[in-house]
Image 1 (cartoon, helix red, strand yellow):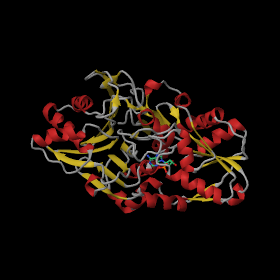
Image 2 (tube, helix red, strand yellow; image 1 turned 135 degrees about the horizontal axis):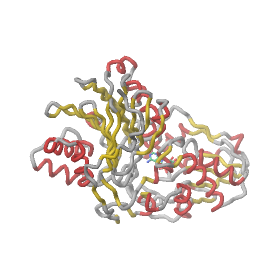
Image 3 (cartoon, protein in one colour; image 1 turned 90 degrees about the vertical axis):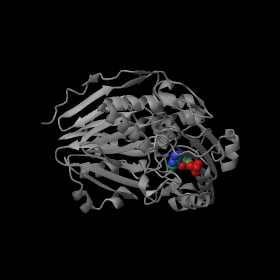
Image 4 (cartoon, protein in one colour; image 1 turned 30 degrees about the vertical axis):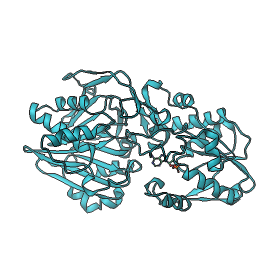
Length: 475
Ligand code: AMP
């Protein structure tokens, strides 16, 4: 999980990168970085913390140039080293290269060992640097970025939406399964690629379309070109983007996330109706689901929990004790709305069970008579290896428990998770378009020790299709 953005704009890019990253802040709060290029020099700035804290306005003025990329990073335990903050920047045979990545590779170790065997050194512990090595080796050998991306798509196993800047040209590519989101927008004087369409909106741009799985986009001051490098036999868009991770106002792979979540809310009522005095969300992640539930059921929507807006996501807390305390500070019940009532409480997911257990306690303390819990995802049964920071099976409350055991453990009156079929129906595409590995334990690609499918991938090297050619190019 992370957010990435790349912009070419004749009028300068640093402020626009900043706003785009602000819009993508929910995708990562641990660190942020921007690199720009003005034709001769790479300007870089990065640091730990939120976008607004890392970049004071004076810094943005110093980040000169009409091309640049940015990254917001999600905290993953043990790797919050300063050298891992992206974009990663390299000087290479008179070329200036920067790269930022959203996703996770499952064959990093093998690839890294191969390079190390050949005498190469690494300066970070990221999989992004492995991607950069493959790209640079191939660009060095053939001089072709397209060939280098083609080689990446043959060699990398995992999820990767990548934005890269070489001498002021922005390249963006997405893995052949399209696991992590990535889209393209048009700006008044240029183009943007970003993890989510809300970043395009924040720049007052026009959303054009998603980067296709297996596609390479090239953008510079003269315009934009697209190449379909690889085509896989199926797609595997991350289901958790729809459930939790993406902003509700984003359009991902053709679907408005808000719409998907309200539909799931309606399904939760259809699948497990209950007579209740009100339906309330766990804010903010449960809000859109609760709206859908209220619409479909006619049960009044109430606010029973108030969120402290100035707190980050509870997962940021590195240990269980801190996570439990964080829930208390983050969410405060309103006893006047809950006392003596039977309520339906909706959240997007139960991971470890910490949040639900604590919230249900708080609601009962505030006088709620019955707390019927409805969850916008099926039970999370298995870890994610492809970019969502899900814990091990041991930490996942549902990995070895049926729903009623989880209900007891969180002390809910009743508990229902949306069914996989209803979830897929709400997204509105075929099951062969989605990665549901965390829900089923079956992954869309081979992963050591797990059950995985083997996609067939065709390579269509070198065929440029200027299918955005109808847009005006900049002079
Ligand atoms: P838990 O307390 O471990 O059951 O966490 C469930 C809560 O964390 C839910 O309210 C979700 O909104 C949120 N959540 C789910 N997945 C993630 C994730 N990968 N990172 C951060 N928060 C998450």
